[in-house]
Length: 248
Image 1 (cartoon, rainbow, N blue to C red):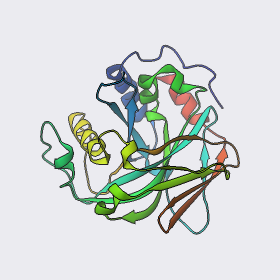
Image 2 (cartoon, rainbow, N blue to C red):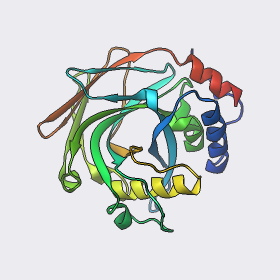
Image 3 (spheres, rainbow, N blue to C red):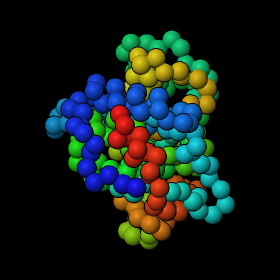
């Protein structure tokens, strides 16, 4: 199932988008395992805008031997390579404002991973960041790869290719303010919304190489140093999510 248009009026700003997102979360039959941090496009010279969207427990997969099989929704489908922070302890209290320097002190385990981004809504991103935020931030899962030391992340170069196309390289310089700025934003925003910040929570901090379109049968290969992570893409389903979108 897919939706050729956004159902109803797309939320005009993030406050409205978060209200829709909350209603959708209350109807979704799964446990929140983490949150993704998304970017709001801004004019040149302005600080980046960000939002958060939930990551559901049943959509999180661990690296295994060979390619990890995943299924994305019909409508819009792409992937992003990200550093994912796993909280190793409960977080409280939260300073206001929460700074990247403070975020560096948090008990965190870092994983290289792939964020799965898809929606039943065709062309969801063309409706703007609030619409993306409302639809769970267009998150449809995470694939968790190797663990890395925090000190290694600023210097790590990550390469991704999809279906053997020209590889794309990137790193934390592609994340505005760096991964700790994204982590500080997520923790601060979630705390203000009353979301629990408990050990084991995953925070996907932003794309290292950009967004990469995928299709049925795509093979995504991520390389960082001696580490390789492969993801095999299938396209299908989305009926429950599409019905949930239409109902809120």
